[in-house]
Length: 343
Image (cartoon, rainbow, N blue to C red):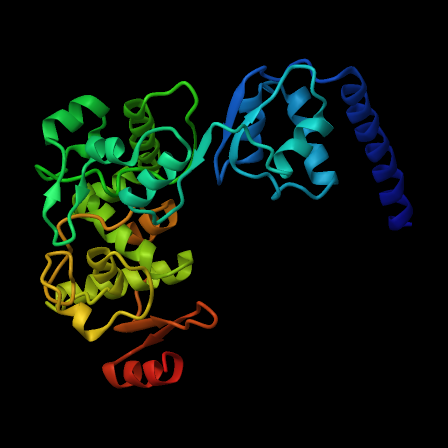
């Protein structure tokens, strides 16, 4: 009896939904923005619908409903898209799940350094590597900063998150990884949008940031270390707690990624000789945080820094064959893990 009742309810609902969708599909949407639209990683479906112009509930329902029916709610790819008002919902969704983005966009990957960003933008023929580095500054191989004047940076990019930027620092760490339009834009405005993107992401954590007794610069610096060390949010939160406790007891952070930042290499095979390189960025030689970020971290690394997961581990390493993070409670366990996974 209950089954028949459910069937009597669901069948008409499905029919109405299909008719509703078919109507808008046949008549075309005609309410979509005729423009270039940026879809960011993490955007909710409602957010995407609103960006595209589906402001009324009547248009959000068929758009989101079609994604649900076709099983594509998680298949939309981040990027910059060109749409027009004559496109149907099917055509719009097909373009987004296949990642047919406009040519003039740049995707900045989480954990990239300023140098890597500059190289990518040069390949995109947006700005030369040298000009971009001159704009945002860069850290030298021995930690000698070729940066920007603090007042100039704050005035030029108009962001409160630069208030703690040390004098003469580069903007390493403040260029938020995402996909950005680069057509008909200046390098200065591109940097402004990256910093503004980071500032908007931090708004949800502003109260926690102020309660943490850490400066924004310290938070971004710690997040940049975590970004280059471990791959997922769970492990990032674990490692954040480990690094904070090491600082509390005066133990060197001993983060391999800081050594790679100095040497210019990227890998897990840091040598004993490399750990002895004299640079304030080398956390094997110098205690505490380095002078500034070593990468431009994504949101998960920032979240992990603000809300670490308490644990009783003191050491960790990455299994090169699986990428899994292996945690150890003491140095003996850590040596055993190194012998097992790294040799």
